[in-house]
Length: 139
Image (cartoon, one colour):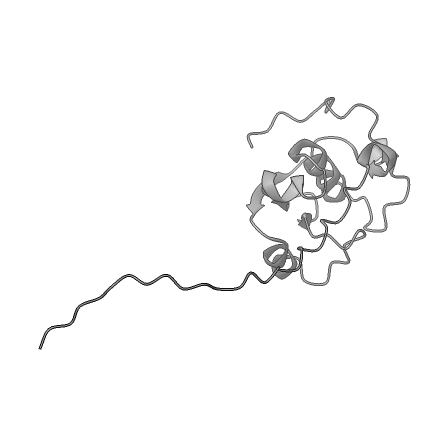
């Protein structure tokens, strides 16, 4: 028995697909209070561990119980007094989805490591997005 196959042209009607939902607007961080007050905006005195996280779902799993103020999970931390602070920060691609950069996010999270409460009292505007006075950490 032999089988042959002949190419056939099949006309399939075009069915338009719905457009994907629009991306959420980027938060204008230069117009949003994101930096900790000066009393918390300094290097963490203990051991600082930084882990980059690929997705918001993974971030939420690592940061159980955290209420993300903008409902976007791009960073959090777990602090053990002044001895150890573990900071979880989204990858550059994840941070870009909300218009943030690594340095600003790290500075924000280190503020929490230094004792800044999660409801962000005294938060300050990011006046110069390229100026991070004490951050000289590897990415």
